[in-house]
Length: 143
View 1 (cartoon, helix red, strand yellow):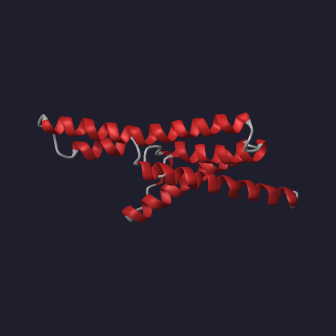
View 2 (cartoon, one colour):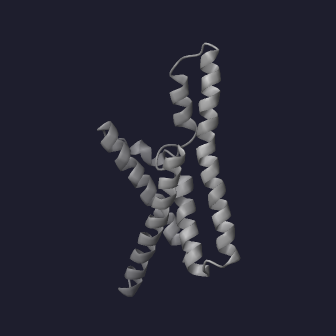
View 3 (cartoon, one colour):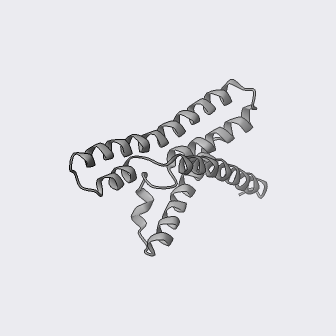
């Protein structure tokens, strides 16, 4: 029961990414479906979905929920911490005379801002609930 919402959330997250970038860049680039580096980040998206699914299946007092919430906290810390570290490294490299666009390239390639990581986490939880409800509705119709 947990696997289908998680897979569905991952697929919807990638479709959201394609939509966000198509609107922002005003150009259709289906290659964005295979892009795992830009917003919304797939790691916190799936972490949010997994946290919601496990907490609903086992209850908030369950040790499984505690494990998943700890795992999700590590994902959030890691996702946003990489961007901070890249910014610091880019600043040092720029002070050594490197290209000025290096900071932008490093921060885009290596991580998400804390706000974006939290938004992806919340979106993952909401998408997980929506996919689960859709699957329950399909089962009720006996598809």
